[in-house]
Every structure is written in C-alpha cells, then in structure tokens.
Amino acid sequence: MHRRHDPTYYWATRRLPPQMRPPTHALYGYVRTADEIVDGPRRSRDARARVAALDALEGELDDGLAKGHSPHPVVGALVDAGTRHALPLSELKAYMGSMRIDCAPVRIGTWAELEAYMHGSAGSVGRIMASLLGVPVRHHADFGRLALAFQLTNFIRDAREDAELDRLYLPGDDRERFGVSQTDMARPSATAEVRALVAHEVDRARGLFTGAQEAIAATPASVRPGVRVACAVYGRVLDQVEAVGFDVLGGRSTLRPWQVPRAVVTALRA
Image (cartoon, rainbow, N blue to C red; front, side, top):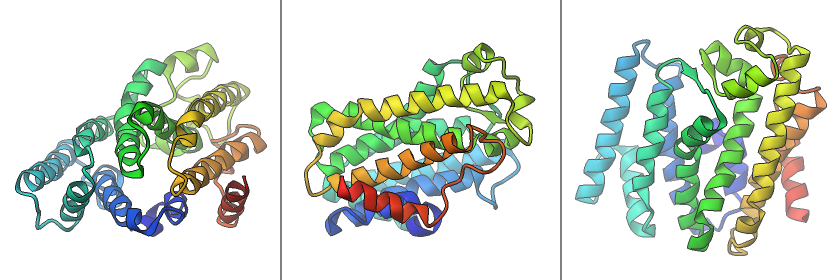
C-alpha cells in the first residue's frame, strides 16, 4: 500500500532501520484508509456517509486499543505496532478530526486556521513518528512541525486538484492580500496574482523546513537518513514549483519519477 500510493514516503521509509518499517507502514495504512474514505475513487457521494465511515474506523481503533487486538487488518496492524512501540496513538483523534473537515467544502480563512488543520492532518502523524524514531521528547513538537512543512508542500503542489474538489487550503487572508479570487484558483493556468500567492506559500514552507533542522539533527543517526530523504524529496517539489514560475494550476509542477531517486541520492550525500 505504502509503495503504491505514496512513493515519497516509501522512498523515505526504505532508509529506516528494518525494525521500524512495519510500524511505519501500519501507521500509513490507517491514515491512508481514512484518506480513501474521504477522497478515494470508491468514496460515497454522501458527506454524511463519509463521516459515518470515519467514525466507524475510529471506533475500530478505539475498540482495538481497549482489547489489545482487532480483526480489522489495517487496525489490527496498527494496534500491534502501537503496543510494541508504545506509540501515542491518541494523536490520531486530531487526524480524524481534520479528515471530517474534508468531507465538506473547505475554506481556510487564516494561517492560524490552516495550522490548526495541519496539526491534525499532519502534525499528529509527525508526533507519532517522532516517538517511533526515538526523537527526544523536547523535539517532538518541532518534529511535528516538519510534518506541517510536508503538508503545506502538498497543498501548494495540489492547489488545482483541491480547487476541483471545492477545497481552498491556502489561507483566505493570503489570497485577499495578493488579490486572488476563488475563480482564479480554478483557472487552467495561474495569473500573476496566483503566482505571487504561491511564491509566498513556498517561502513559508521552506521556513517550516528550516525551523525543523534542530529536530532533524536530534534524530538518532540510524533514522536520520530517512528523515533527510523525505525532506529532500519535498524540497525538490518546492524547487519544481519555483522552476515552473509558481504556476501550480498548469499541471507542470509534479515531481517526475526519475527525479525522486536523484533527490534521494542528494540527501544521502549531505
């Protein structure tokens, strides 16, 4: 599942010690299952049905954690991983909260609102991974912010696709500041105003990556290459966005398959 749906994270986890890969895949399996409920090709057209399915998945995890096991294959793997590695799986409550937001049209008003959303959709997973990877507790919050950098990069790259799903994650106050309307975000190519907005958000994402450097340096040496690979691949996405003139609506900012290994090699040489 991991390799098929998210090659970026797959490449990164390949650099983790072997004993850490199964719990990482188990965590990914759960969050991906929730994502499929919301956005998968077989998702219900009824928003209430999607919310109910998320509630059921969350209930399966709650029940599995209470009993110490679950017949649900995805949940069972995560319960086992959580028990073996003492993972703070309660963080996933925030993740599911953000997934429920995605069941309706999304309009993020401010950076503070986007941060709150991403603390659930990404930071929660980052904090669980910090625990798994042995990051010192004092750096868990900063490591969680690294996940925000990944998430913001995704929102920048996927702005057109998200707009087609009636979701505008880039903050409304930023859009207003740069003179970008909802209609502008649905155009086949970016206006000068949209390009300026995207350039601003790219700078913000890079700032988040910079702010996480101390937490990255604090990761154990055995797992640091995997973290560096993830940062390098996402950093290359931002570079690609800049290379196309910040036109994320034109469909040209996707990282090509052959560029991923190149970013991996660069990271491992650092």
